[in-house]
Image (cartoon, helix red, strand yellow):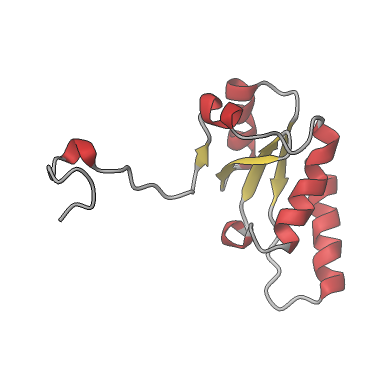
Length: 122
């Protein structure tokens, strides 16, 4: 049973993807509601997503935010910035390193987040 139309055709199957080494297609990004209008708001959403555990899978890599939306990830921050800038333009875009925090205290975590934000804004 295919759970869909019953045809079993490969055309009916959904794409299986991993959210690694990606950027969202520009059309998909436009369909998501902006969380912030300005690039200077990206650190707020990066910090909130990090503290909520939404970025745990990306520790030790880089993530891109466009108008407050997590829109990409890569192990290579320069590559991510280049690709995201080519697709979205530089306005409203920030690329952050995601610090590893296993076993860290909340003070250490906050310091690492501050350091990541500072590095992204350089």
